[in-house]
Image 1 (cartoon, rainbow, N blue to C red):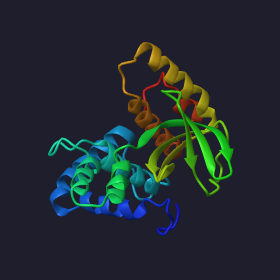
Image 2: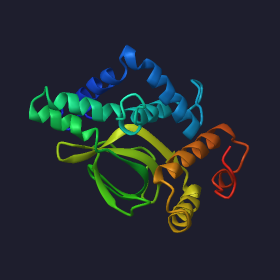
Image 3: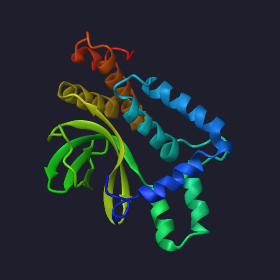
Image 4: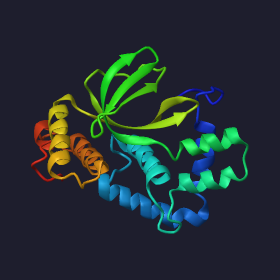
Length: 221
């Protein structure tokens, strides 16, 4: 991401949120959250190729998505409320951005200079993400799991991604369409997590055809 001195860098604020979410008094809840995340997406180990990305995704899940049974709020919501009473407006606005992230499965619609246009598969809504780096291997039509953070009038990527192979594009889109029509009560994140499990299986079981791993008529391992 941008350097900490960049006006588009949320990292200094994120560091404060991470510190808040990992204090000793929250360690047990943090471990419970990790177990929950592994149940959803599959357990990863340090020698897994996807380990670092998955741990980044877990941190996102813990900070932004998971409502703590202890407080009834996400750590991001808790910290924002705390800073709202104790920080100048520009800082509290930065912390509010962590309560407004957009997470899902996205199709890459356009790659431009400093911009990536994404379409969230469930809602069909387009998002223009400010991204100054060239993301190696990313092409129009690809599908990826990502999280977008509104900051400084821009949408920025979090550090967590899950890329899905090109042969998975058609079955993922078909499964989105099927669920929206036949199982509309299911939360979109259920498919996000299931696809994450399938991506992990693709890396782990290289003897299996990718098409078989992303066959949604088959139960995920």
